[in-house]
Length: 383
Picture 1 (cartoon, helix red, strand yellow):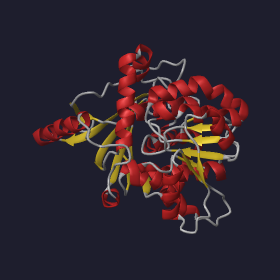
Picture 2 (picture 1 turned 45 degrees about the vertical axis):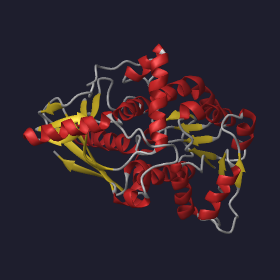
Picture 3 (picture 1 turned 180 degrees about the vertical axis):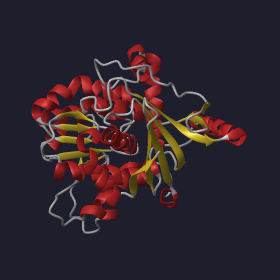
Picture 4 (picture 1 turned 60 degrees about the horizontal axis):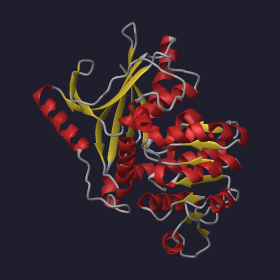
Protein backbone atom coordinates (compact mmCIF):
# COMPACT_ATOMS: atom_id res chain seq x y z
CA UNK A 1 0.00 0.00 0.00
CA UNK A 2 1.38 3.39 -1.04
CA UNK A 3 -0.10 6.05 1.26
CA UNK A 4 0.20 9.64 0.06
CA UNK A 5 0.40 8.81 -3.63
CA UNK A 6 -0.72 12.28 -4.78
CA UNK A 7 2.16 14.36 -3.39
CA UNK A 8 5.31 15.24 -5.33
CA UNK A 9 7.34 12.33 -3.98
CA UNK A 10 4.31 10.05 -3.77
CA UNK A 11 3.76 10.30 -7.52
CA UNK A 12 7.38 9.36 -8.14
CA UNK A 13 7.09 6.33 -5.86
CA UNK A 14 3.83 5.30 -7.53
CA UNK A 15 5.44 5.49 -10.96
CA UNK A 16 8.41 3.45 -9.76
CA UNK A 17 6.16 0.79 -8.21
CA UNK A 18 4.32 0.55 -11.51
CA UNK A 19 7.62 0.05 -13.34
CA UNK A 20 8.83 -2.61 -10.91
CA UNK A 21 5.55 -4.44 -10.34
CA UNK A 22 3.06 -3.49 -13.03
CA UNK A 23 -0.58 -4.22 -12.25
CA UNK A 24 -0.51 -7.92 -13.09
CA UNK A 25 2.36 -9.18 -10.93
CA UNK A 26 1.92 -11.74 -8.20
CA UNK A 27 2.26 -8.96 -5.63
CA UNK A 28 -0.97 -6.99 -5.19
CA UNK A 29 -0.64 -3.33 -4.36
CA UNK A 30 -2.78 -0.23 -4.08
CA UNK A 31 -2.74 3.55 -3.79
CA UNK A 32 -4.20 5.41 -0.84
CA UNK A 33 -4.61 9.04 0.20
CA UNK A 34 -7.04 11.68 1.32
CA UNK A 35 -8.10 13.05 -2.08
CA UNK A 36 -9.96 10.48 -4.15
CA UNK A 37 -10.04 12.59 -7.31
CA UNK A 38 -6.28 13.15 -7.32
CA UNK A 39 -5.68 9.48 -6.55
CA UNK A 40 -7.60 8.55 -9.69
CA UNK A 41 -5.44 10.99 -11.66
CA UNK A 42 -2.28 9.31 -10.36
CA UNK A 43 -3.71 5.86 -11.06
CA UNK A 44 -4.75 6.78 -14.60
CA UNK A 45 -1.25 8.07 -15.32
CA UNK A 46 0.43 4.77 -14.36
CA UNK A 47 -2.43 2.30 -14.99
CA UNK A 48 -4.72 3.43 -17.81
CA UNK A 49 -6.77 0.24 -17.44
CA UNK A 50 -7.90 1.27 -13.97
CA UNK A 51 -7.23 -2.09 -12.30
CA UNK A 52 -5.12 -0.64 -9.49
CA UNK A 53 -7.15 0.02 -6.31
CA UNK A 54 -7.24 3.67 -5.19
CA UNK A 55 -8.51 4.06 -1.62
CA UNK A 56 -9.55 7.38 -0.09
CA UNK A 57 -8.41 7.58 3.55
CA UNK A 58 -7.61 10.59 5.71
CA UNK A 59 -4.28 10.61 7.58
CA UNK A 60 -6.06 11.92 10.70
CA UNK A 61 -8.80 9.26 10.88
CA UNK A 62 -7.45 6.58 13.26
CA UNK A 63 -10.34 4.14 12.69
CA UNK A 64 -10.05 4.35 8.91
CA UNK A 65 -6.27 3.96 9.10
CA UNK A 66 -6.62 0.92 11.36
CA UNK A 67 -8.97 -0.69 8.83
CA UNK A 68 -6.62 0.22 5.98
CA UNK A 69 -3.45 -1.29 7.45
CA UNK A 70 -5.21 -4.51 8.40
CA UNK A 71 -5.69 -5.09 4.66
CA UNK A 72 -1.99 -5.07 3.78
CA UNK A 73 1.36 -6.51 4.82
CA UNK A 74 3.35 -3.36 4.10
CA UNK A 75 2.66 0.38 3.97
CA UNK A 76 4.93 2.89 2.23
CA UNK A 77 4.06 6.44 3.25
CA UNK A 78 5.20 9.70 1.69
CA UNK A 79 2.80 11.92 3.66
CA UNK A 80 4.89 14.65 5.22
CA UNK A 81 5.64 16.54 7.28
CA UNK A 82 5.35 13.31 9.26
CA UNK A 83 5.14 15.17 12.55
CA UNK A 84 1.96 16.82 11.27
CA UNK A 85 0.38 13.97 9.28
CA UNK A 86 2.14 10.70 10.15
CA UNK A 87 1.65 9.78 13.81
CA UNK A 88 -1.72 8.00 13.50
CA UNK A 89 -0.43 5.78 10.69
CA UNK A 90 2.61 4.65 12.69
CA UNK A 91 0.34 3.85 15.63
CA UNK A 92 -2.04 1.87 13.42
CA UNK A 93 0.75 -0.16 11.81
CA UNK A 94 2.44 -0.91 15.13
CA UNK A 95 -0.81 -2.12 16.67
CA UNK A 96 -1.82 -4.22 13.63
CA UNK A 97 1.58 -5.83 13.07
CA UNK A 98 1.83 -4.21 9.62
CA UNK A 99 5.23 -3.24 8.25
CA UNK A 100 5.79 0.50 7.72
CA UNK A 101 8.34 2.44 5.64
CA UNK A 102 8.74 6.20 5.26
CA UNK A 103 11.13 8.89 4.02
CA UNK A 104 11.31 10.78 7.28
CA UNK A 105 14.05 13.32 7.96
CA UNK A 106 12.49 14.58 11.21
CA UNK A 107 14.55 13.10 14.08
CA UNK A 108 12.58 14.63 16.94
CA UNK A 109 9.32 13.09 15.64
CA UNK A 110 11.07 9.77 15.06
CA UNK A 111 12.21 9.75 18.69
CA UNK A 112 8.62 10.30 19.82
CA UNK A 113 7.45 7.41 17.62
CA UNK A 114 10.19 5.13 18.98
CA UNK A 115 9.22 5.97 22.55
CA UNK A 116 5.52 5.47 21.86
CA UNK A 117 5.50 2.41 19.57
CA UNK A 118 8.74 0.40 19.69
CA UNK A 119 7.51 -2.00 22.37
CA UNK A 120 4.13 -2.43 20.67
CA UNK A 121 5.82 -3.20 17.35
CA UNK A 122 8.08 -5.75 19.04
CA UNK A 123 4.97 -7.44 20.47
CA UNK A 124 2.97 -7.48 17.22
CA UNK A 125 5.87 -8.10 14.83
CA UNK A 126 5.48 -4.81 12.92
CA UNK A 127 8.75 -3.68 11.38
CA UNK A 128 8.79 0.15 11.46
CA UNK A 129 11.49 1.47 9.11
CA UNK A 130 12.10 5.21 9.08
CA UNK A 131 14.27 7.16 6.61
CA UNK A 132 14.28 4.77 3.64
CA UNK A 133 15.54 7.30 1.06
CA UNK A 134 18.59 9.52 0.60
CA UNK A 135 17.87 10.22 4.26
CA UNK A 136 19.60 8.00 5.29
CA UNK A 137 20.27 4.80 3.32
CA UNK A 138 23.48 5.76 1.46
CA UNK A 139 25.02 6.95 4.71
CA UNK A 140 23.95 3.97 6.78
CA UNK A 141 25.15 1.52 4.14
CA UNK A 142 28.44 3.33 3.53
CA UNK A 143 29.35 3.25 7.22
CA UNK A 144 28.18 -0.36 7.59
CA UNK A 145 30.32 -1.55 4.66
CA UNK A 146 33.31 0.42 5.93
CA UNK A 147 33.07 -0.98 9.45
CA UNK A 148 32.54 -4.56 8.31
CA UNK A 149 35.63 -4.22 6.13
CA UNK A 150 37.62 -2.73 9.03
CA UNK A 151 36.66 -5.66 11.24
CA UNK A 152 37.64 -8.12 8.50
CA UNK A 153 40.99 -6.46 7.76
CA UNK A 154 42.05 -5.07 11.11
CA UNK A 155 40.03 -7.04 13.66
CA UNK A 156 38.17 -4.00 15.01
CA UNK A 157 35.89 -1.22 13.78
CA UNK A 158 37.12 2.31 13.21
CA UNK A 159 36.48 4.52 16.25
CA UNK A 160 36.37 7.55 13.91
CA UNK A 161 34.54 7.79 10.59
CA UNK A 162 34.11 10.90 8.45
CA UNK A 163 31.26 11.12 5.96
CA UNK A 164 32.24 13.57 3.23
CA UNK A 165 29.94 14.66 0.39
CA UNK A 166 32.26 15.05 -2.59
CA UNK A 167 29.67 15.99 -5.22
CA UNK A 168 25.91 16.37 -5.16
CA UNK A 169 23.45 17.69 -7.72
CA UNK A 170 19.76 17.82 -6.86
CA UNK A 171 16.89 20.00 -5.72
CA UNK A 172 14.47 20.43 -2.85
CA UNK A 173 10.72 19.88 -3.02
CA UNK A 174 8.07 21.93 -1.27
CA UNK A 175 7.28 18.95 0.97
CA UNK A 176 10.87 18.68 2.19
CA UNK A 177 10.93 22.38 2.95
CA UNK A 178 7.63 22.07 4.84
CA UNK A 179 9.12 19.28 6.97
CA UNK A 180 12.14 21.40 7.82
CA UNK A 181 9.97 24.38 8.74
CA UNK A 182 7.68 22.22 10.90
CA UNK A 183 10.68 20.80 12.76
CA UNK A 184 12.10 24.24 13.51
CA UNK A 185 8.71 25.57 14.58
CA UNK A 186 8.23 22.74 17.07
CA UNK A 187 11.75 23.20 18.47
CA UNK A 188 11.08 26.90 19.01
CA UNK A 189 8.07 26.12 21.23
CA UNK A 190 9.18 22.90 22.94
CA UNK A 191 12.38 22.66 25.04
CA UNK A 192 12.32 18.84 24.99
CA UNK A 193 12.08 18.85 21.19
CA UNK A 194 15.01 21.27 21.00
CA UNK A 195 17.06 19.04 23.31
CA UNK A 196 16.39 16.03 21.06
CA UNK A 197 17.43 17.99 17.97
CA UNK A 198 20.73 18.90 19.64
CA UNK A 199 21.47 15.38 20.90
CA UNK A 200 23.48 13.26 18.42
CA UNK A 201 22.17 10.15 20.20
CA UNK A 202 18.54 11.26 20.25
CA UNK A 203 17.46 8.08 18.40
CA UNK A 204 19.22 5.80 20.90
CA UNK A 205 17.15 6.18 24.08
CA UNK A 206 19.18 5.56 27.22
CA UNK A 207 22.60 5.76 25.54
CA UNK A 208 25.12 8.59 25.60
CA UNK A 209 28.26 8.17 23.55
CA UNK A 210 31.34 10.36 23.22
CA UNK A 211 31.32 14.00 22.19
CA UNK A 212 30.57 14.36 18.48
CA UNK A 213 31.78 17.04 16.03
CA UNK A 214 29.18 19.76 15.62
CA UNK A 215 29.73 20.25 11.90
CA UNK A 216 28.09 23.66 11.93
CA UNK A 217 30.80 25.87 10.40
CA UNK A 218 33.34 25.96 7.61
CA UNK A 219 36.62 24.39 8.73
CA UNK A 220 39.84 22.86 7.44
CA UNK A 221 40.00 19.03 7.50
CA UNK A 222 43.66 18.07 7.82
CA UNK A 223 42.96 14.38 7.17
CA UNK A 224 41.66 15.26 3.70
CA UNK A 225 43.70 18.43 3.10
CA UNK A 226 40.47 20.20 2.22
CA UNK A 227 38.06 22.83 3.47
CA UNK A 228 34.66 21.44 4.43
CA UNK A 229 31.22 22.96 4.98
CA UNK A 230 28.09 21.99 6.94
CA UNK A 231 25.88 19.41 5.22
CA UNK A 232 22.14 20.05 5.36
CA UNK A 233 21.15 16.39 5.90
CA UNK A 234 23.75 15.62 8.58
CA UNK A 235 21.29 16.29 11.41
CA UNK A 236 19.20 13.26 10.43
CA UNK A 237 21.85 11.02 8.86
CA UNK A 238 24.26 11.07 11.80
CA UNK A 239 21.48 10.16 14.21
CA UNK A 240 20.35 7.27 12.05
CA UNK A 241 23.93 5.98 11.82
CA UNK A 242 24.21 6.03 15.63
CA UNK A 243 20.87 4.21 15.91
CA UNK A 244 22.07 1.61 13.41
CA UNK A 245 25.15 1.08 15.53
CA UNK A 246 22.99 0.48 18.61
CA UNK A 247 20.57 -1.83 16.77
CA UNK A 248 23.56 -3.87 15.56
CA UNK A 249 24.76 -4.40 19.14
CA UNK A 250 27.19 -1.46 18.91
CA UNK A 251 29.07 -3.12 16.07
CA UNK A 252 31.00 0.15 15.59
CA UNK A 253 31.82 0.38 19.30
CA UNK A 254 30.44 2.51 22.12
CA UNK A 255 33.20 5.08 21.52
CA UNK A 256 32.24 5.67 17.87
CA UNK A 257 32.57 9.23 16.51
CA UNK A 258 30.92 10.20 13.22
CA UNK A 259 30.16 13.38 11.32
CA UNK A 260 29.15 14.51 7.83
CA UNK A 261 30.39 17.54 5.89
CA UNK A 262 30.53 18.76 2.30
CA UNK A 263 33.90 19.04 0.57
CA UNK A 264 34.92 22.48 -0.64
CA UNK A 265 38.45 21.58 -1.66
CA UNK A 266 42.04 22.59 -0.90
CA UNK A 267 43.53 26.05 -0.75
CA UNK A 268 41.85 29.42 -1.03
CA UNK A 269 39.52 28.24 -3.80
CA UNK A 270 38.35 25.34 -1.63
CA UNK A 271 37.74 27.65 1.30
CA UNK A 272 35.67 29.98 -0.89
CA UNK A 273 33.65 27.08 -2.28
CA UNK A 274 33.04 25.73 1.23
CA UNK A 275 31.77 29.15 2.30
CA UNK A 276 29.41 29.19 -0.68
CA UNK A 277 28.14 25.69 0.14
CA UNK A 278 27.51 26.75 3.74
CA UNK A 279 25.51 29.77 2.58
CA UNK A 280 23.39 27.64 0.25
CA UNK A 281 22.68 25.10 3.01
CA UNK A 282 21.59 27.87 5.36
CA UNK A 283 19.18 29.47 2.86
CA UNK A 284 16.97 26.92 1.07
CA UNK A 285 14.46 28.10 -1.54
CA UNK A 286 11.58 29.33 0.62
CA UNK A 287 9.29 29.87 -2.40
CA UNK A 288 8.66 26.15 -3.00
CA UNK A 289 5.16 24.91 -2.15
CA UNK A 290 4.08 21.33 -1.30
CA UNK A 291 3.66 19.43 -4.58
CA UNK A 292 6.50 21.35 -6.27
CA UNK A 293 9.99 20.06 -6.90
CA UNK A 294 12.68 19.34 -9.49
CA UNK A 295 11.58 18.45 -13.02
CA UNK A 296 12.02 15.01 -14.55
CA UNK A 297 14.98 16.37 -16.52
CA UNK A 298 16.56 17.79 -13.37
CA UNK A 299 16.06 14.51 -11.53
CA UNK A 300 17.69 12.54 -14.36
CA UNK A 301 20.65 14.97 -14.43
CA UNK A 302 21.25 14.66 -10.68
CA UNK A 303 23.89 12.58 -8.91
CA UNK A 304 25.70 12.11 -5.62
CA UNK A 305 29.15 10.94 -4.53
CA UNK A 306 29.80 10.43 -0.81
CA UNK A 307 33.00 9.08 0.76
CA UNK A 308 33.32 7.45 4.15
CA UNK A 309 36.82 7.64 5.57
CA UNK A 310 37.67 5.35 8.48
CA UNK A 311 40.56 6.32 10.77
CA UNK A 312 42.04 3.74 13.13
CA UNK A 313 43.95 4.19 16.37
CA UNK A 314 47.10 2.70 14.79
CA UNK A 315 47.10 4.79 11.61
CA UNK A 316 44.82 2.40 9.72
CA UNK A 317 42.78 4.11 7.05
CA UNK A 318 40.14 2.95 4.59
CA UNK A 319 37.62 4.65 2.30
CA UNK A 320 34.24 3.55 0.95
CA UNK A 321 32.49 5.43 -1.87
CA UNK A 322 28.71 5.52 -2.31
CA UNK A 323 27.49 7.04 -5.57
CA UNK A 324 24.17 7.51 -7.31
CA UNK A 325 23.18 8.44 -10.85
CA UNK A 326 19.99 10.45 -10.17
CA UNK A 327 18.80 13.44 -8.18
CA UNK A 328 19.33 12.15 -4.61
CA UNK A 329 16.18 13.46 -2.97
CA UNK A 330 13.65 12.35 -5.58
CA UNK A 331 14.90 10.35 -8.57
CA UNK A 332 17.07 8.18 -6.30
CA UNK A 333 14.91 8.32 -3.18
CA UNK A 334 11.78 7.01 -4.93
CA UNK A 335 13.75 3.97 -6.07
CA UNK A 336 15.37 3.48 -2.67
CA UNK A 337 12.13 3.18 -0.73
CA UNK A 338 10.61 0.82 -3.31
CA UNK A 339 13.63 -1.48 -3.20
CA UNK A 340 13.69 -1.39 0.60
CA UNK A 341 10.01 -2.38 0.75
CA UNK A 342 10.55 -5.24 -1.71
CA UNK A 343 13.56 -6.46 0.27
CA UNK A 344 11.52 -6.41 3.46
CA UNK A 345 8.79 -8.46 1.78
CA UNK A 346 11.19 -10.91 0.14
CA UNK A 347 14.10 -11.21 2.58
CA UNK A 348 12.97 -9.81 5.92
CA UNK A 349 11.08 -12.82 7.22
CA UNK A 350 13.45 -13.37 10.15
CA UNK A 351 13.55 -9.72 11.18
CA UNK A 352 11.89 -9.05 14.52
CA UNK A 353 9.34 -6.33 15.07
CA UNK A 354 10.33 -2.92 16.33
CA UNK A 355 11.50 0.50 15.14
CA UNK A 356 14.42 -0.03 12.79
CA UNK A 357 16.75 1.83 10.50
CA UNK A 358 16.71 0.20 7.06
CA UNK A 359 20.47 -0.31 7.05
CA UNK A 360 20.46 -2.20 10.33
CA UNK A 361 17.37 -4.16 9.27
CA UNK A 362 18.46 -5.24 5.79
CA UNK A 363 22.16 -4.41 5.41
CA UNK A 364 23.91 -6.04 2.45
CA UNK A 365 20.58 -7.31 1.09
CA UNK A 366 19.25 -3.83 0.42
CA UNK A 367 22.70 -2.65 -0.75
CA UNK A 368 22.62 -5.30 -3.50
CA UNK A 369 19.05 -4.36 -4.45
CA UNK A 370 19.95 -0.67 -4.72
CA UNK A 371 22.94 -1.51 -6.88
CA UNK A 372 20.81 -3.66 -9.19
CA UNK A 373 17.72 -1.47 -9.41
CA UNK A 374 18.32 2.04 -8.07
CA UNK A 375 21.54 3.26 -9.69
CA UNK A 376 23.49 3.31 -6.42
CA UNK A 377 26.94 1.80 -6.03
CA UNK A 378 28.89 1.09 -2.84
CA UNK A 379 32.61 0.40 -3.29
CA UNK A 380 35.63 -0.06 -1.03
CA UNK A 381 38.44 2.12 -2.40
CA UNK A 382 41.27 1.48 0.04
CA UNK A 383 43.18 4.17 1.90
